[in-house]
Image 1: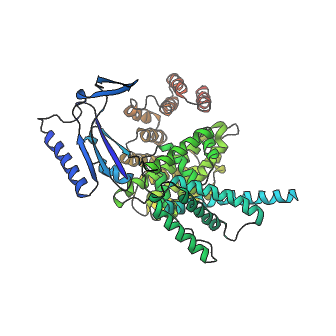
Image 2: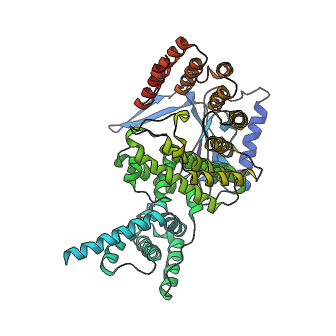
Length: 119
Length: 418
């Protein structure tokens, strides 16, 4: 099964760039990614730019509307994701727990819906 | 003619109800192993039971009723797979089912039912499910309780409970909660989650008061049944034995705990001759067996405390000093301030109310909103000959009480001060 691990953290909750904690934090990400790759479960994984760069797109009455944001200041924000192929939820949880942000933020693990367009 | 036919149908219905209670766990476990689909396994089992009612009313019971139901349910599953639009994905399971069906058809013997209940209980008690859902699902799948019965036990409507169970099955299937026994590295944690669910089931019944009490007492019996099942499925586990002992010992005292009007009778007022000596003996024996393994844990310690109560001929001659020590050990394992509150109660009988009042200071901030904390403090003040202070604290406890039965109990105690 495919699982999307959505990485959430409150702004400023993790180690900042330039602090001594930042290096080990990024090493944690490298280690997690290496493990996913060597275990053959990694399908994709990216970090996202800050939520201040976000644009919301809506189509209303055929017209495209855009808006800056959302910039929720205090809430946990989506900061990145991994797409993993695991045999079951237990495995997905085990891999998600390796993501360093899990220690101050939270990882939402969602199974990917399988849609068969031929039917 | 009609009367006779309806009697057979009634007989078949009773046989099926009995079978559901005794064998649902086994049947569902076997079907789940073959189909790998929780919802489908349940649906096929239901259909097979409905089909049993029809056939057995007509022809009487088959030689091996459970085997008959399993075979029929497997055929229902085969039929569903054939009709499934996404058939390819289930090709492997379909092949397994077909093989099993042909094996059975070729011999005269009923199919043997593999025991997959341990895997089933690990699935139902998976940490990705909410606590209440875990309890409900376990009662449904391992104890064979109907949705209506579970709803009654939780004082929910049948619709709400049905929705909860549907959502749980969907989550198990869609999120890929595995039908597996956990890896050794997670075994301890996951096993404790199962024991915790069983204890929650027990407490749901044990803490019930007033109207719902007789219904809820069944929950205690179901939890004990599950505890025994775990002893059978995972023999030699000290905490599992400790949990079974704890439930037996607590349940043994239940007959003395409820008054005629459904009110709870405090331990020191209970008629100890009403306690169930056979259950106490069984609990005691299980506890001894557990303690001999030298792997202490919270359930064993709580059972040891319960055993000391069960042992004592009366409230006064209880070994309170030993109970204080057991609460110390319990708190060192699980940092729950309620254990310190219970320790203070034991201390009040071992050393006196003054010492107990002093011990409460350490947990005052943490338990300020907890009714039993104030009830205990009021009782200590009363016994320390400070009736005015006691009355004030009783009022605070009454204010925090969630149900009428507690309020009446505390008011009674307050009025008895003079």
